[in-house]
Image 1 (cartoon, rainbow, N blue to C red):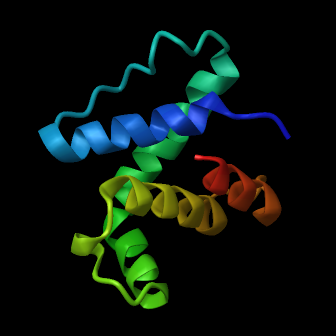
Image 2 (cartoon, rainbow, N blue to C red):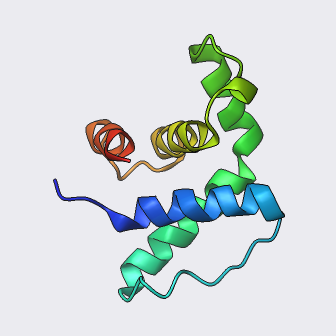
Amino acid sequence: MKYDPVRFLVIQHFLRFQETLVFTEAPPQQLHDSKDRRFFHHLLSGMLRHYRLLEAEISQRIHTPLKKMPRTAVAIMALGIYEQLFTRHIPARASIYEAVQH
């Protein structure tokens, strides 16, 4: 599998949203393909919509309090769990591989 910049950009925008609480619907300029732009929007908006659930799922599996973990690590885990719970067309091995790559 090759590196997926869409997920990297989703994590960047998710972390930026957590800092600023500003959500822009426009996908990043780096995404030229309409399929990538739709996938970006699907992942980011889904993570934001279901973040409390994703936090709870992470907390059940990790013994370290989330506030003590690096925000990037929590965001990566949230993205992987979101894909597992809400994105049926992505095989589990692919979302795990992509999460580890980031």
